[in-house]
Length: 352
Image 1 (cartoon, rainbow, N blue to C red):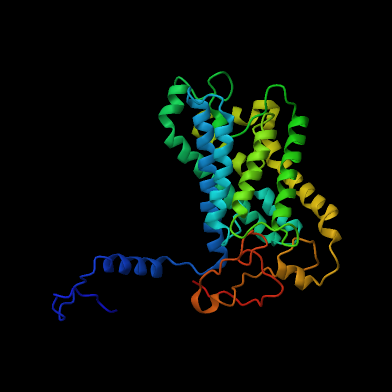
Image 2: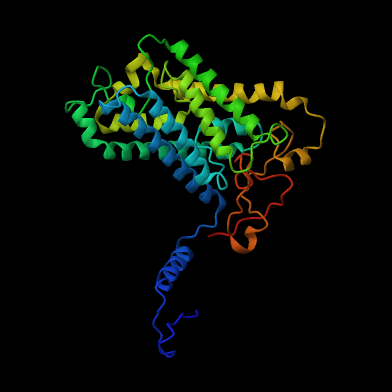
């Protein structure tokens, strides 16, 4: 290691005279000690962090809306926070895990053969865990505000309820059937438009701006379809915080309120994702001119093609020597780090 010396320092001195040298050396040692080469673990860490950021911003916006009398009922501010949180999450993990942050999106990618089925339960667990942890962070952040607003009682219903900071509940006039349809349509629109954004053979979004476009899409859906049941559109976003409220003091009513509403935001978005994905295929993607499957994959098209995904965890060619992740161009899925492309040779991972 070469030492940087001040001009007046003695060259025989072995101390580090450059103020940044100690920091650089520390970061290098930390990186060497903590660096993970396993691709799946790297993707899970990125997915955990991006989902955590998404949910902590989303729930914080809801907490301000509910507990602050000055912002009471200001839905637009809450929706804007949630939309911008989507953008932040994509920028954090888009080139590593694909920044799914939503089991419904992962499910749609599996249906389109752009994401391996064996990773789906892993990603769903990571996303749900991140949502649970985010709910805990928001509870700590707004602890005083929650207890002040609720007059010292954590309730799920009533004029001073605070459970809806964390999980979604239907309006009193919304039936289970209507709420289920609401989530199928809302998530279907979300996935359908994302399919168009991802499709490089359609109207392309300028590279690097895809997260901004997706955020605007989320904002438009929440602003227009949020009154029935809060517009969850994401099973992990709902079940993770709901489990937190169950163990944090709100009790079993978080599962019974709304005629047992809890399962709707868990199941309906998955069905909506399938509907949205297949509608895009049926009305747009299936009708492109015939091309080889390899060409479609190389172009990043989301046309449903017959490709096989090796269940083994592979590394990209550039990772063989460095062990690093080669960021794929966004939109995330199909993402080279998340999906093993048939055009890329599979090489076993070295054990970390």
